[in-house]
Image (cartoon, rainbow, N blue to C red; front, side, top):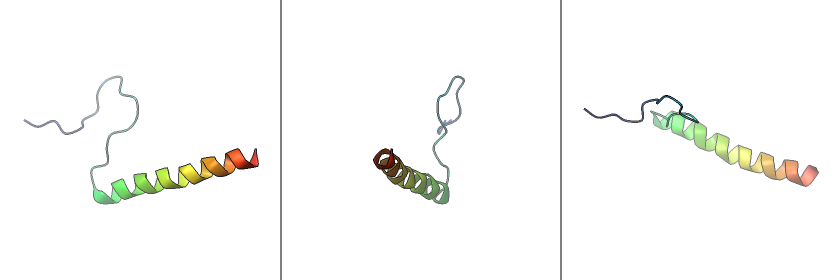
Length: 44
């Protein structure tokens, strides 16, 4: 029996994406968030 990234009690964070589309969405979010943080630091 294989257990491939199932949720655990007390888990902090989300599970890894199960499809390539979901993985692309997560990567896009991380990419945008990096620039958003950089811009927010410059503005403040």
